Every structure is written in C-alpha cells, then in structure tokens.
Image (cartoon, rainbow, N blue to C red):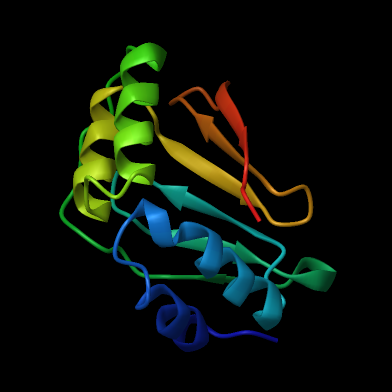
Length: 129
C-alpha cells in the first residue's frame, strides 16, 4: 500500500499543470486508483484497492468557495494552469472563485471531474497520457 510520504515525493516534482501527466504516471506506479482534492484547504483523499484510503493534511490557509459556479471562467483558468502559466495555489484560488469545491481524479478512467459545493459535476476532462 502507498503512503502519504510516497505521494509527497511524487508531487514534489510538479511545478505547474504541465507536469500533471507525469505525476499521474507516478501515482499509477504507487497503486493509487484515484483521489479527491478539496479546494477549501487543499487536503487530498487518495484511494487504492480494497477500499484503502489515506488523507493528507491541509496544504494552505482556507480558500472561500463561491456558491455561484462560473464554468466558462473556470475553463479559462484551467487552460492557463495546464499551460504552465499559474502555480498550484493560484489555480486553487481561481477554482474557489469559480465555485469549484473539489476535483476527483479517476486514474482507472483517466478522467478529472470538477464539482461544486453541492457535489454536482461541473466539468469532466480526459487526462492526457
């Protein structure tokens, strides 16, 4: 089973959204099947086989998540981040401003799904491999 320390080592290589595909490959090697990232404090819950989970600590000061979703603006911020134009914390702040409460990475399906505060799906994207 994987540990938070192993995941932190993989995550340390990520400098921008452009590094995300390599990060996913590292997680696959560790046995991670998926994870949820919570925008309000940055904690992440990772999932493995047989209902195995580990949860990281909060990563930053609280970010307010808007009750109103602005999907179009979020997509603009997402494209900027994936192009390497913003760092992780900036992206999280942008997500919160646009009403994104969490995102779920499904490594089996190779998708990333963004949710609002009511757990409604806002955007689903394929993860490049």
